[in-house]
Image 1: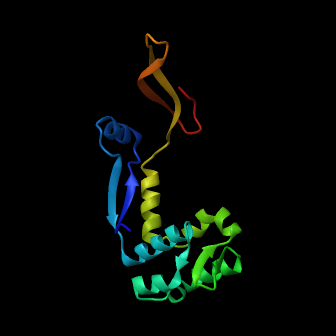
Image 2: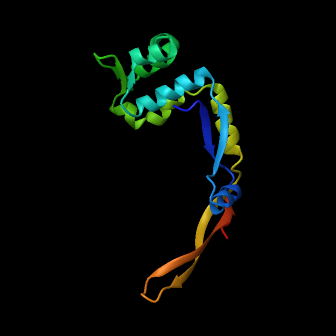
Length: 159
């Protein structure tokens, strides 16, 4: 797993400029602290095959139950996770449905602050419609030559 947190460019104009230039529209982000890396490992594992508790302890040098006792208690009390006889922490059916909320328990305050900051960079603009210049080919097919996204203010009139 990467030791960095990556974000897609939040500003649409910069995003589009990078894509049109053939670059990846990624803002590189920041190096993850050990706490963030542990939480991220748990989030991804829960959304796939589950957290093998012995592997977590081996990888991070601390048992999951000791590092995340409050989170584990909340998830067990609400029947969102279970631990198999093989020592795998997995989401229940209700946990799968609520996996986004489950993941939030494993975000550090610093990560939540970064997410809030990046969300704030998006502003009040939102895509409202696509306009295209279409060229008809001799064989009858159409080819899109240019796309332009129009914006309107959130809650305001559309162009």
